[in-house]
Length: 370
Image 1: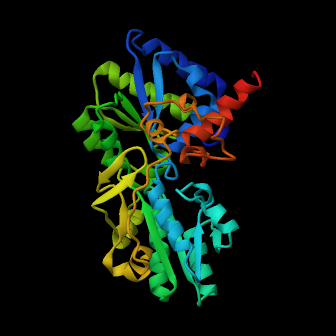
Image 2: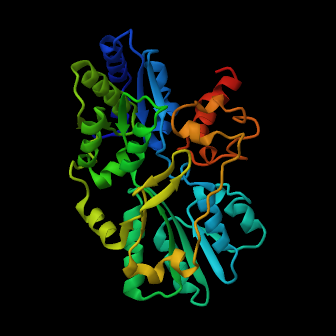
Image 3: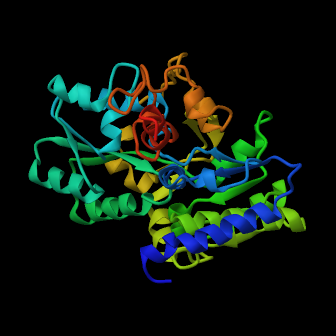
């Protein structure tokens, strides 16, 4: 298939749905976690849950990088943004992520020089145009976006731009999945593996999880047929007693990964010993920091950032939603105090956040009786 419409073919969708219904064990309750926020968005957007048997439950995992960013980390970034002669740059979703004392947008309204950028290179260009100011990029994302940050840092070194630095919040998907499976209050039967992350790291790294935890993992695309086929593949593996990594998204994801992207990440980053995740707590070796060779462009070194831990608002159980223990609508703030326009928790900020996706594609339709 070559075109998007082919991945939304109603007849093929109906056939795969019927096949899933035919193969499931009616006496078993399946729990499949889609790790990627892009998958969560597609599931709600296309109403895929309505095409599945009632005993298949889709659990929304911690695959949205904005959602898993703890408040303390946001506060660290804002403490830099408040400093004199600093231009603080960030991607669009980050601008609305709440820290303990507000969001970047709110701080901007109070006079701080905070600018939205579309790529790390935008931030580097701002630094080159403002040599008398310190320009900080609040870098965020899984392995998907880390290569572009790495390339920008290599460019900064090549051009010797002294007033540019990166505050790295890049995280790793494999340790997060392991932390979920190690959690005593979680039961996951299989994973719909992330497509964007896997386009960089490949499918091979998931093999250790499948083998150790005896869980099938299907790397999936984002269209309705992709996701339904991935769910069918999970059901088949469970029916046959297999626990393997399969690559449904082979048109994009090379099994061994993107070696060029992995090489630049390896040159610029090293793994942190510990990093705090919203809802999952501190996870060992789950994030990236700049290597000592790039200390000159490391905002944590330049501004001597001290890590701080700030608890989420008690009324907003974001962590339980991220771990799949609660559904978005089960939060008492959902759709009331907490909306995409006025988010209390980070899961309402990004379109890939479980709460924002549920709000737009389920809650609003129910409200108008559709």
